[in-house]
Length: 222
Image (cartoon, rainbow, N blue to C red; front, side):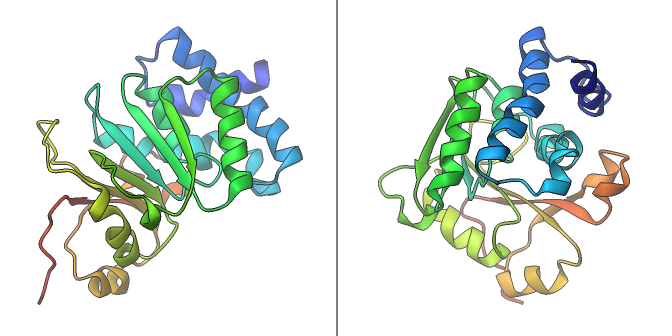
C-alpha cells in the first residue's frame, strides 16, 4: 500500500479535490494493471513501473483542460489497455465512457480493470471506430493511435453537434508527441493545442501535446 500511495502522489499533487472513492480507485490501478499485464501484455514491461506518470497522469491531461459536464458521452478510440478512458472514467464518474479497440485481448483487459474498480460508467466494444454505426457521442478522445487526419476521419461521423459544455463545443481531443507540423498540415485541420509540459512538470511530458478539433470543423484549405 505504501508503494501505491507513493506513486499516487504524482496524481494528487495536481488534482487535490479527489474523493475517497476516486483515491481508492486510482490506488488500485497499479496492482490491477500489474496483475492483468502478467496475463496479457498491454503495457510495456519498462512502463508498468511508471504507470501513474506515463499512463494515468498523461491521460488526466485531458481533465486538466476539459471539464466534462455530467451526462455527456465520450468514446475512446483505440483505447489499448484503457488509456485515456479508464483514468478519465475515474475522474468523471458522472460521464459515460465507451472504450473501443480492434484487438480483443486489449478489451478483455479493459473489462477486467473496469470490473475490478467497479466503474459503472464504462462500456466497451471490440470494434474499429470506423465500423461503428447508428451511434454518436459528445466527445472522442484518443492517445497517439493514428495520424490526426485518420483520427478525424474516424471520429467526425461519431460526433453530435449538441453543445453541452460552455467552454468547448463537442469534438475530438487527442494526445500526441513530437514535431506535429507535417501531420497537422497533411490533415488540413487547424487544431487548438496545449503543451502538456505546461500542465505537468515531469520531464516525460516534454514535447507532448493535447489537440482539440470541434465537431463540424472546417478543414484548413490553405
